[in-house]
Length: 139
Image (tube, rainbow, N blue to C red; front, top):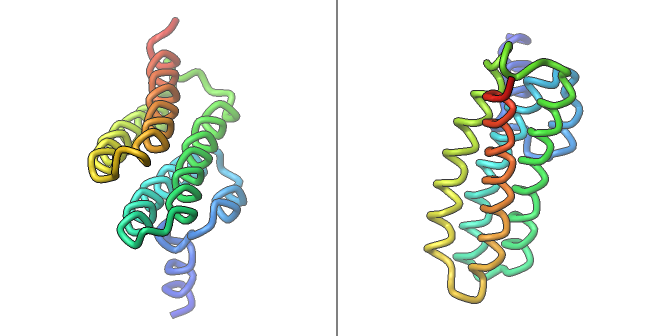
């Protein structure tokens, strides 16, 4: 019974705060958790926009950017060569591509005035994803 409760506490869906993700000692797992948090924040941003809560919408976008940057920094902190050990780098690449698609959908849902904020976040995710791909591909 205690094991089941411990498992529920540590699932990525329950890690609602990026500071909790930063507590993860394993850099590769921290990268995964950060991208899961970014994915969750897309839903938060969408809901905040539907409720016309501009400050919550923008802070959710900021948290997406912070989570993606944390994921990239965590992968870099492993010190592993992405070409020789691509497992977690490729996972991050796939999750970031999915995240870009979701952010693109959000971009089409928001009004013209708010679109520029979403585009900035999407471009940051694209930039970091491209860097991960380059890390995997370079010799």
